[in-house]
Length: 419
Image (tube, rainbow, N blue to C red; front, side, top):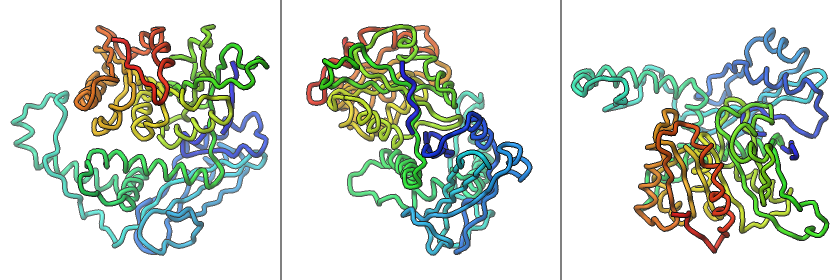
């Protein structure tokens, strides 16, 4: 097993790898990640908003003596000092400890076309509550106005004061207009994907992208006799519980767990890690695949993607955005956007879920199954484990047929999952 630390954006904090990092730098970085960022990300007028990170004593306690610097970029990643037009901007916050590399965080900002008063509430109608809350339909109907007003206040505040609200506004502002025949549901998904891609592009522009992953190589990879051989690549996306900075956590579940326990896979296995509090980004996963293909001798027609829970969501989303990149995909106890059914129906997919899953309900996978099979059921299979909860990955990744099926697929020569 090789632990490869190549370049992590998986959170908004990233560290350049061009400088030697002291042993305690990871702890400093984790401490800075936990600090509060004070900013009002939605603003009007040319003056860009100030950005503060907690209080000076808190930053001092986290990293010791340091310098603190904030710069700004526009939607084209050009450094600016004023917001000359409405649209997307970003603040680049850099904390440089006295004896450590800088730690950088970016936050999306949005300049409105006109001033927006916080009492100008967004319009929401017919807000519903999940059945699990236990309210009868007549109660919801009788108090619909109260529910709508509460939701309006919360959404208005979120849009004005939460960085994620600014990300949504910026993504909508710069989104292309719908064309005739475009599916609005698919466009909804693509807007958020585009927002992630913009943030990833900013980090690439700043030179602060890092992919951190475990690598397990097949027997014979280093044999000089195989110097010209190209190998299959399996990319595994872990779940939320394995996020953080301890790379060994990635091997708690799934294929890397089996590799650590001595199972010999006939492919290159790359298992990246998300930072604490982050989510799989389509742009980041796609860039990781490119990085891995450059780092190892990979057959471009035999690249496979799989992931569990949060990684299952990442697998669905990445496959939908880049269906021509993968020969087969195996999402486990995740979910995706049913509007992607027509795209995903062309790709060999074997999905897995437990029918007793209370974390990610089975309906997340069945919704994808219905959307795909309504177009074409020839390359899709959903395996449902009776009585199994969220850890359906134990069953899925212990099934040798999964690996045999994945490796039997090549781009242009696809095979359906075993029936």
